[in-house]
Length: 465
Image (cartoon, rainbow, N blue to C red; front, side, top):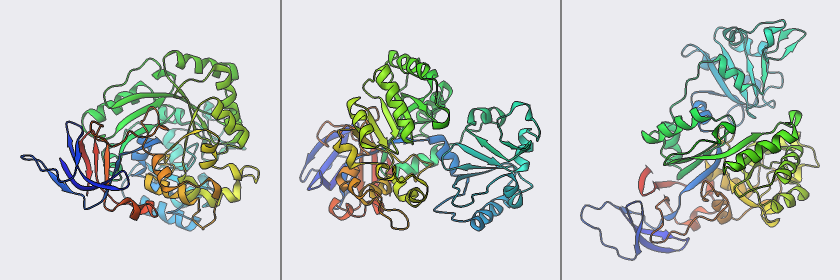
């Protein structure tokens, strides 16, 4: 393929030839070869393909068939009730809601859901991913009951089921038939936004999940390269072309932290398998605990902190000393900023989802969306990294804002080294590319509105308008 008149490196306009999965030639006035496809770029920016370094692919695919139960689609109880009732009028079987937040309905429980949907089993997930709330039909479908419940993990108040299930996805998977959603639609949607690589950070991924992703990639259902995090069961597994084994993911919960010595031993075990580790840290306590464990067990290249949602200077300095990578989600400042201002302790607010401050402290930084718990569009996340502004217009941490170029770079690093700079677009480079419909100077101040004309992964056109 010959791309004509593309803006390369944020400036020069040239022709670019792609052949055998790589950039084969760059120059002015290149002539088409026999049978070669020619794409006129009309001065549009030709950029490295994007990579989302932290999301949950199967949950994202499932979310497409779920009811949105939180902002920005749903803002109050009346809207939530209307959305659930409308969904219940179509189809049969289980209904699944996602993205709920207590700002919409602070009293969500079994009885509230029964008033909306009584005839069909229904479960609604909190946007943190750590809480499901069921209606009575859903509880009956699971075979749980009031009283002692026979050891199930549901919350009970005076012996009666509230409908709430906390941090028990493993248990739930044993009670619900597992139907893996097709990845085709979401993969193509991401390709249309310029995304060529993904890291699935679901901490419960095991060998079956790795095999599932590999099969989806082999049959062309999954278009992106994928790095798969998971638990200790992946220590002895190997990846396949297009699907790599990723870090051992530890999902810390401040209220139930693991035994420290056992955690250090698990870190060391994965390191012996030449496997890095990654820690989910959304509170100051979780981050301090993870850093203490890495200090004790020893950090290695590739070890990561996911989120680092609250990273005060003393912990940022420790992250830098341990040479860890932080994979953050600037989109949360836009999507959740107003709730943070209401709910987060004042002492923690200056350190929320830091960007420039972490870079200034010497921390290696990469970007992601955490979809489906955040919006899956990386361009909107870039815009949020530049603006640091909530839905209602409040600014959070203005001094943490990045330039458009720095925000873009968060989403271009290699999957196994996400904070590294993307290789320059030069002859011989792998053709992981995206082409915008306008030059960079016209896009850089409105990144959230960027239009991607075409996306190539290893020279193969995987997305186009």
